[in-house]
Length: 429
Ligand code: PMP
Image (cartoon, rainbow, N blue to C red; front, top):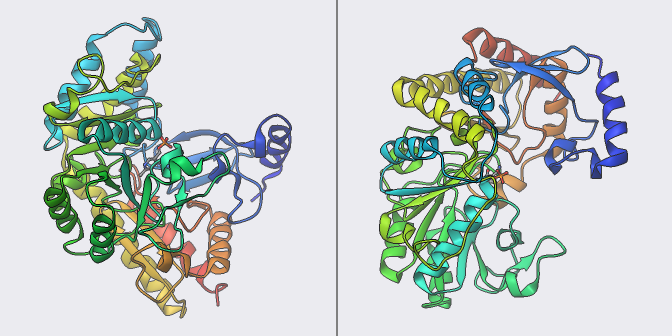
């Protein structure tokens, strides 16, 4: 494939945008090469600036669960735009999408809309702190909750000691309130809690991790966290920015039958427009301004175009809940197909999958946490990524990302992907 125009566009972009991109993973740093510029997308396909057609396994990092440019979503946005694009005043559609979201998701009474997953998680943690009167939070190494200061903390020498910032600009003062734990390790979480008795406001996690590749919670992990939270007066925050309205209508809470105290959303809930949200039972949500003292606001929060896109997609999902099964089945088919061709070529790999989230790790050991994800062979991943791209299949340009399967993908697309993988597998050993 020819990427001349993409390369030229990237060179222009680099002159005026840091790294040529408005979000770092897009820059192909982890895999090398220059990023592809998109011209348009429809259904399961991307069409790039050079006229190449690619099967898309990123789907805007999750939002496009029904595929790109879905008619109901596009029409809803066009109709809304004709009536004005922002007012900074209440509109009826905000209540409509809130009612629908509250009806689909278990254990929430009220929801507030923001503009990104980052904002949702940042606000959820502030609310947890305001509600419990405690400062510290526990997060898991390898879980991503957006780029707010409290979350940009990497593993220090011991999880019970203070975290250290993993970006300049995040202060030690902030870092000291973020405690790190190991995903899928309840014993470790219990130790962190014991070492910080009565200081922890919340535990935040991705109930299925999607930011170190896809990593499912091990059996009993979520239940164990629920129990630890109950015993220690800690709020459990499920970051469902990826999993919400994807794994089930009620997200991971529904899929695993575990109750969270605060839930955050992004991606699917905005139908591809910039939307995030956080939600909880009434008693917690009523601590928010203007009812309560915990401040949180946004000029464009509840923006009519964003709400129109979000409402359209939630209505589609609510009225056809079979979609969740259908995309999970497609993902299982892909899993089996990839597994067969990689095995027959003697490649060392582990595939993790939950519902419509899946990732391939080039490691023959189980991938259950950040360290085991990081131990996989990144050179193989780079070759795999570029090989697949040459075959017209666009997967995430980093091994620390999940692929998202959309409803628009056909079994022919899946077969084409599996056969591409078979060819690429021959180059991996
Ligand atoms: N939480 C999770 C689980 C995410 O995957 C992401 C983004 N990939 C975020 C939060 C941050 O969302 P945003 O990029 O919309 O700020």
